[in-house]
Every structure is written in C-alpha cells, then in structure tokens.
Image (cartoon, rainbow, N blue to C red):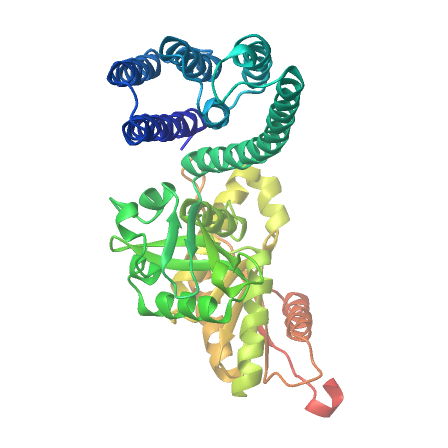
Length: 472
C-alpha cells in the first residue's frame, strides 16, 4: 500500500468515525429533550438541524475539499450555535465543543486545527460574555466565570493539540516507513517471507509470486510457509532454521514448477522475542550462477585447442592427488612436448603452428580411453596427461599409444602440403603419501621429458623414482 492509498484509507476511517459520533450525539440530544420534557417545537428544530448537519457532512465528505480539516469541525460548531440560538437553549455547549475538538482531531492538520481553535475560542468568549452572561437561565455566567471557562477550554485545546501533534507525527513516520517498505517490496526481485514462531506466514511480498511461481501468494497467509516448497530436504532445512531461530545465509537449490532454481537465501530472527518470528529473503540467482559457471568453464579451457588449460590442470591434480592419497593408489603423470616445434613454426608460419597444436590436442583426446583420464595444455607446445589409478606399466602403454598415434597424424598446410610431427613424453608414477606435494610428480615427469629429448626425441622416458624415505 503506497502513501496515497494509506491516506485514502485513513480518511475513510475518519469519515466513518465522525459519522458515528455525530449520529450518536444527535440521537442522544433528542432523547435528552424528550426526557426533560422539552418543547415540541424545539424538538422539531433539533431534528431538523440534525438532519441538515448529517446531510451536510455527507456532502462535504463527498466533495472532499482540500481544507476539509477546518470546514467540517467549524460547520458542526456553527450549526450547533445556530440551533441553540433558535431554541434559546445553550445546554451542553461546552460538552459539544469538546466533541467537536475530537472531530477536528479526526481530520488533524496543524494549521487548520490552530485556526479552528482560535476562531471557535473567540466565539466562545463572545457567547460567554455577551450571550450567556445575560441569559435568564441556569447557564447564565458572570464575566469572571466566562474568562475562567475560556482559559480552561483554551488550555484543554492546547493540551489536546500537543498530544495530537506528537501522536500524529509519530504515526505519520510509521505510515511513511510502511508505505516505503511496501513500495520497496513491490519492486524488489527478492521474495520476502515473514513467519511466526510456528512457521505460519505473516507476510508475503508480491515478488514471491514471481520467484516461486505462485499465482496467489495472499492465499498462503496464515498457513505454514513450508507449503511453499516441494522438496522435503528444503522443508526440513527451513523448519530447523525457524525452530532454532538461527541465522542462515547460503545458496540453496529449490524446485519451482519442476525446474531447479538457485536462490541466495538469507534468514534471521526479527528480534530477541520469539513471538516476533523470523524473516526469509530469497533472491533468485539461477541465471547469475549459470553465467558464472559458464564463465568459470571458459576460464578453465584453452581457447585455441579447446581442451583444459594449466589452471584447470592445477585444480584437477590437487583433487586427484588427495583422492589417490586417501585410496592409496597409483597416480601417473605424462609430460608431452611437441618435438622441434620452433622449427615447424619458422618453416610454415605461426598460423600453421596453431593448426599443428590443434591436431595434437585431437590425437591426445582420441588416445585416452577412460573417463577419468585428464588432458590439459601445460603451456606453449607442452601438454600434460593425468592418469588416476594407473601404474607405471599402464602409463607407459598409454604414452606409447599417444606417441605412435602422433607419428601417424598428417597435418595439411594451407597449400595442401602434408606435414608430420612427433612428441617426446616423460612419465612419472607414484602413490601419494603424507609429506609430499603434488608438484613433485610434475617435476619428476618434466625431468623424464628432458631425458627423452636429450636421447633423440620421439620417445617415452619412464622416470625412476626414489623410495618413500628419500622423497620425504
């Protein structure tokens, strides 16, 4: 509900309250005249004025003047004074004045309220000194009493003004905060859910319908908010958070209309009082997470050859090293280098060199048969292969298969010339153990590659690893 809607809502409530007070007072005034045996002509006048005042009120409320906060109270007061003058009876005049002050409070406006009090108090003083002071009835008062009544009424008006001013000021601050909160909840993409200590929904923002694809969020108010979610695991998680009133912030996958969405969930208690319940804020980050994963995948791929890059290799070897350490199995590492790549580049050009590297990547991928085998570009013309649960003999077989497949590969130049290339491969195999970092197997394979190149290239060289005590 925005500020304008709040204002209209409160105006309607004020109108109903004023109508009720006025009708009740008119009925009471007529009953008093009947009980006291008043003149029938006076009864007719009172009823007529009551009808006129009520009709005038309804008309004024419908017209909705800008200065309504001044017109309605003054209209009531003028009508009562006029009626009292016609029937020559000023009974209850001070009671009526306080009633009208309350009505003025219903349409509270600082400027209008002060204006009404000043004008009406001047009329009160005039009536007290020049009308009631000479009135031949029980309401006749002396000038001193008139000034006393005037002072008392003015003081009461001022006190009522101070109370109303600060009450309305604070109320307006709350209303404005609520209106701002409501406006924020209408535009924010975050789904906000307020729940009580029993997990029943106290408030749902409109964005819940969009985030959780619920047609009528309002229908869930008063029901368990766990009904908003399909998975049992999600319900148990949120139920536990509410019961323990614990702080929670994390990504959570939630099924929405048979689609899995990722939400950034933030939950916390409203206050230290358990009765105030908790609030949950769910941000749909499905697309952001998807784009992040795609970007991360791109950052782990070599853009030229379309195989994992060095960064991906570092991540994979750390994971496989720890797994092999736990399972106590062999881990083999192959370091592969394209022989005489610089000469090939100088002879055929860098573009043709790139074509050779692409061909090498395709050959390596075809030569690896298991899903656990991992190939990556180590840098430049160097490649690395990580083989989980693979002993030295098995690694040697795979390395030879790669070397022979490369020998058979033909790379065509832009002019249609057939070119060939070879690779040298260094192989290192060990069972990871505590005290040795995964960098050791890379260094060992690199040394084996150096030996392969020094001993004629186009060959596989198996590293001779020291025993465990020597490595540590």
